[in-house]
Amino acid sequence: MGVQLRPRPPDTYAALLRELNAIGNNVNQLAYQANARGEATQDEIWEAARLVRQAVQLVRDTL
Image 1 (cartoon, rainbow, N blue to C red):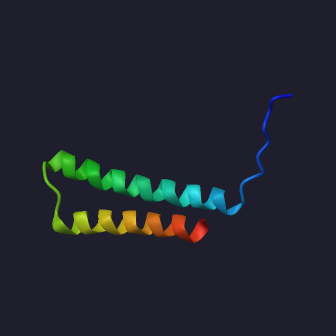
Image 2 (image 1 turned 60 degrees about the vertical axis):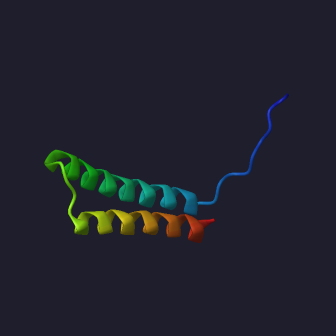
């Protein structure tokens, strides 16, 4: 019929997507605050970097 079926993704993918979404929301809030003030504190930069590293690790652990 011309349709290529793929296996269902593992259940851990849904949990990963929820975690990545939460991390993305946190990074977005930090960026919003920095833009509203016209600057970011060193702590905000470190926190954003930590969240991105956490996201990368979650992906690595899941895949």
